[in-house]
Amino acid sequence: MSFASITTEEKRRVLGEFTEVKADFASRGWFAGTGGNLSMRIGPYSPDEFYFAVTASGKDKTRSTPEDFLFVDQDGRPCEATALKPSAETSLHREIYRLTGAGAIFHIHSVFNNLVSEWFWERRAVPIQGVELIKAFNIWEEDAAIEVPILTNYADVPRIVPEITERLDPRVPGLLIRKHGVCAWGKDAFEAKKHLEAFEFLFEYVYRWELLSKK
Ligand SMILES: CSC[C@@H](O)[C@@H](O)C(=O)COP(=O)(O)O
Ligand SMILES: [Zn+2]
Image (cartoon, rainbow, N blue to C red; front, side, top):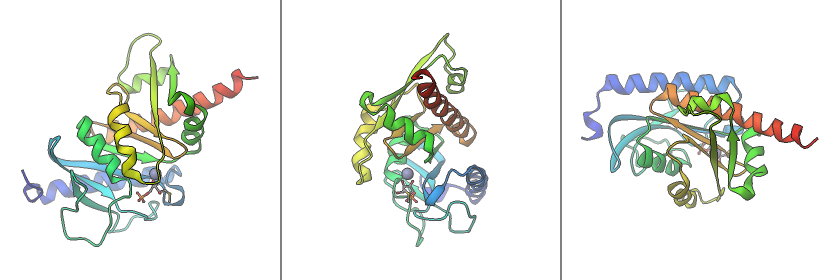
């Protein structure tokens, strides 16, 4: 299987869906200061060979232009001639695809995800228990408890990758990077978006609950 065998129609479908998700997230204020990056996988998958569309680095992601995305392979190399640079955080997306076979990964910065990542840093995870929206992760047990891993925010992004390898919990489709943001994923764009919305709701809940319960 090579990138060349992926049809133009399929590329258009992925980029169309990708454009919609990006505009939706922009309308929620999730790309402050060019922060955040998105990716969607395309074509067949094996852990050693896969392709994905990823946002170009440093762009104003609240705008829609013909230069918003490029296709890269499992090593982060562009699949087509382009002047665009893949996201500076492409190595994180690559590792999550390699470990999970997900169909889409969305990374955003928000005040609540930054706050909880610092509040629970000593524990290296955000504990969440018994909140209904845990079911968005397809976890249905009574009073379910999850721990969302928090990773070190190394300036040299590839240094974060071994922490993903070590800490990713197959039950929990997301992880936090300390005082930086969240990565959430799912089998397709619909599911990755559902998971991201659920994480953001849960982080705000946890933050507010911490404040209330300290009073
Ligand atoms: C300018 S904000 C932060 C960036 O360094 C980074 O964290 C980010 O999410 C966006 O980087 P990008 O290379 O545009 O995908
Ligand atoms: Zn980021």
